[in-house]
Length: 141
Image: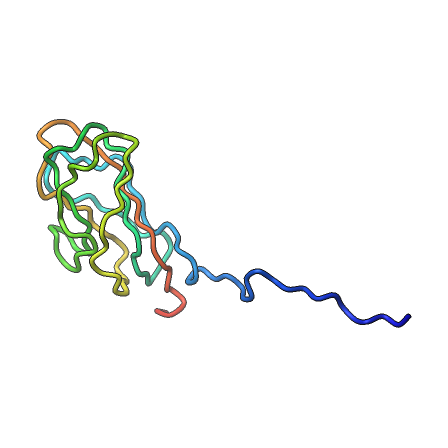
């Protein structure tokens, strides 16, 4: 019998996965002080253009009954508001993961984002912030 040719090699994902096709960690800061108003800088990890899709606040050191915070493209809650400054009262402990509402998915090119604590907790408190999104560097060069 003659060789019928190569076997069918159907793939579950028909294209090569590039960084702009998958959500990845863009920035992270552990231990953001939520007992003082002001900014914490989150450097962007290896991207010249990105769109934020998810912002996670988690690992609160205490129940954040009074604090409020947001994520912005410039200091002092300036620039584009990625996440509006809002109460963190749902963060009642270290196991709570709070996915914040993303207000802007516009292309960003700045190399820092800023967590702005607009209202302090009133007692020693920290939390962690994770920023996920699409790396669009290939389109912004």
